[in-house]
Image 1 (cartoon, helix red, strand yellow):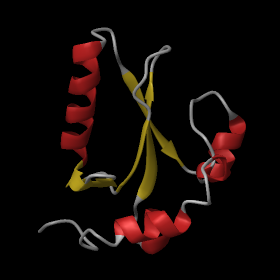
Image 2 (cartoon, one colour):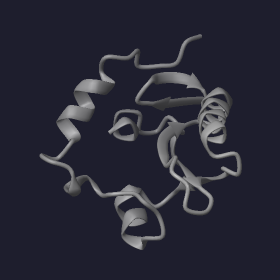
Image 3 (cartoon, one colour):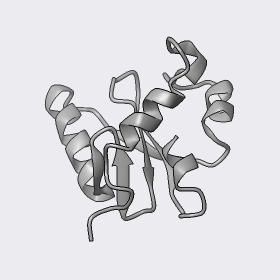
Length: 111
């Protein structure tokens, strides 16, 4: 939903894919400087550091791959080899819920 609302603004869908069988999957939008996820805006480097630090405390061998999903989430999910679920796996399609949630935050990152 975020990418739809920011079409043409150079944001891309990023997937933090844990290496091995560890937990810690995460999706967010980024323009390589700013990131937007369920917490709202943050610098992407800060998001990655906080995410990795949290999982490394629980799983010292934890690591991740930063994947740019170019083909869109539905096509990527269809390829498999991850722990992601397509929107239709969630009760009631989440688009309206996502739209309302995103609208709680400023439309652009802090200056």
